[in-house]
Amino acid sequence: MIRKIIHIDTDACTGCGLCAEACHEGAIQMIDGKAVLTREDYCDGLGDCLPACPAGAISFVEREAPAYDHSAVQQAKQARNQAGPEDVPSCLSQWPVQIKLAPIHAPYFANADLLIAADCTAFSYGNFHHDFIRDHITLIGCPKLDSTDYSEKLTEILRENDIRSITVTRMEVPCCGGIQFAVERALENSGKDIPCNVFTIGIDGHLQ
Image 1 (tube, rainbow, N blue to C red):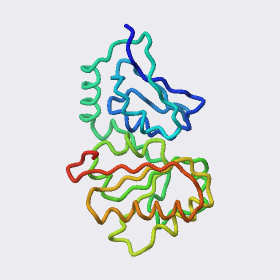
Image 2: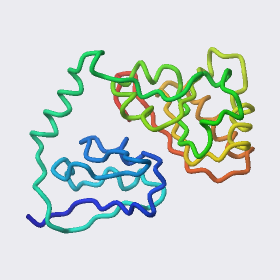
Image 3: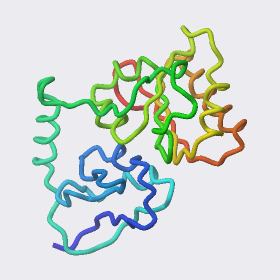
């Protein structure tokens, strides 16, 4: 059938993974550092992934494609939610993860898509590894409990490394704004123009 579906320009794609995070149907996967529409029947054509792409690599096209299979999408989501711990591998790719402990010149920062997460977000959002940690270098901290200015350390990390993108996850509670503020201040102090997206998670565990 001819229908509206997304198109990913692989040449323009920077591999930040934000579109895969925004695709609630699981139609987009990151393969060899590029976003790929792996399941056309999972793409509903609504384009939640479009505004998430900082490179403008995603657009709508009308072409021959299988129909959107809502039932298959729901079954896949249910399978992911019901998978036991032995079936869900960790997506964490480096250690340490605490902002305070991370070395400034670690090799894994080279061309990294950086995730800077408030501690509580990983415990509140059930699919955190798949939706946020996957394909990212992860740094975590709690601005309320840690008596340190994260912006100083983060400024050095951003200044001394080629960071491709930054994803920030924070809780909806006011004290969690400190992690977002630290990242914004570090970006300003580093003098670099790095794409940055902030995701807020409610205390009910859902993205706001």
